[in-house]
Image 1 (cartoon, rainbow, N blue to C red):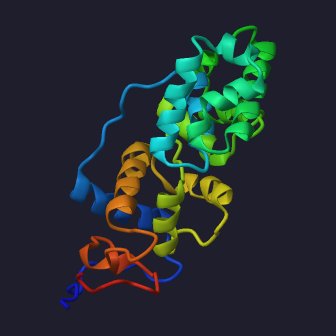
Image 2 (cartoon, rainbow, N blue to C red; image 1 turned 90 degrees about the vertical axis):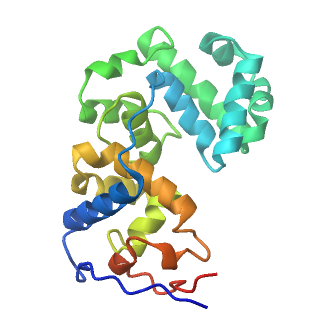
Amino acid sequence: MATARGKSRTRPTAGADESRAIELLSERLRDRYGTPRPKSRQPPLDELVFTILSQNTTDTNRDRAWAGLWQHFDTWEQVASAPVDKIANAIRSGGLHKVKAKRIKDILRQVKKERGDFDLDYLQAVDMAAARTVLQNYKGVGAKSINCILLFSLGLPAFPVDTHVHRILRRLGIVETGDLSKANRDIQEHVPDESAYPLHMNMIRYGREVCHAQRPKCWDCCIEDLCVFENKNLEVS
């Protein structure tokens, strides 16, 4: 078996500044993948429901659930007025469909009660702190989901920490907590605004292609010299 060659790049010492570590990570992944550009945005309410459907499931099943929702309904008004069981049946492919159906219905009714319509577009005109405060009022929408809405729908420089991003951050020693919600809160101050979107997208890609949960491809890793993960897989398979 061949093994990965040692890197000559500088490795941060224990306790190194998280912002500098994020900067190095961002540079390495940009060199490898380039700079992803934001795609077209969904309205905030659409993104909110989309994030609920994405919880505890794969992207494929989330997309199937989203498609199923619109095969059964034409408007948010129809979804909000429907029995929970009917909503659950429409999103069954996404998993936890009964829990998510009730969550979606409750949020839609709350939005209608507070805003008089099924519309959160006004969030596009407020700053990130204000938008975050509003989104925290919806039950079942956690820190990661809020960061996704802020970044992908509102174009604000929030940094969502999903399982892929969390795994890489922990292996690099940038975050120590196993609590995903806490990681989503703690990391924000260390990510420059201009890096939020490209770094998030590049880390997800890297987590899927190289830094796997099991048997990561450490021998093909461009950040291995920054990594404090103990169970490295340095053998080329």
